[in-house]
Image (cartoon, rainbow, N blue to C red; front, side, top):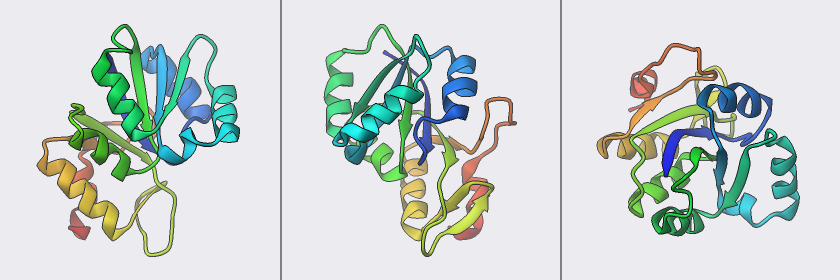
Length: 161
């Protein structure tokens, strides 16, 4: 399997992901990895409607994603993987899936969060997870669209470390 891009985006699949990112990446499959979304028939239906024509969709728990990836189920796909929150990405990596790069795309404001970039708000717990991901060798950027210049997400949150 070729995981061609990994993104954190609390909105999961929306216009920007469906059109700009999928077209730019040439993705053949969007894999949403989120325990809550995978258990909601309504959420899965909405995600399916937002998926571009010709692109397949998988909405999986973290454990299901690990099992399917390790089994080779998506070996012929170009997978665009989307997480709702950083802890799910960490769980996937800790289960043995190699994610060398992560794009932090959208994290909405919540109680106690700090805005670090337009549309990116992090809590203390999020910062700890990003530190752990960084220590595991994961390169992290924060780009809203593919044409935006690449940056180092750890530099963006350095004041919170």
